[in-house]
Length: 77
Image 1 (cartoon, rainbow, N blue to C red):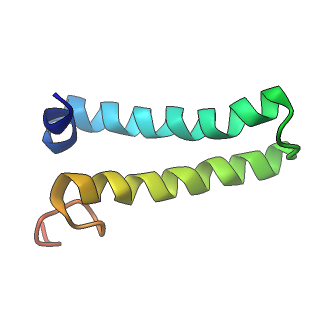
Image 2 (cartoon, one colour):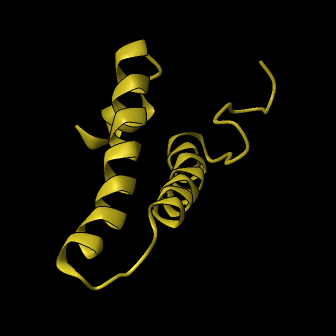
């Protein structure tokens, strides 16, 4: 099932992967902030969240196709 989730190119699967990336990024920043392990300003927290999403997106593309550039097999459309 995980392979189907990662490798599917349907609109629903792509949307779900994008939402999941955002949820993971927010959780990685919000949980330490809520517990008190991290003391960041809201601006810094939003930058860290965006940076996490920027790293997760090519990682998922790498898992799906082996090409971290844009998720396409040959790098071209």
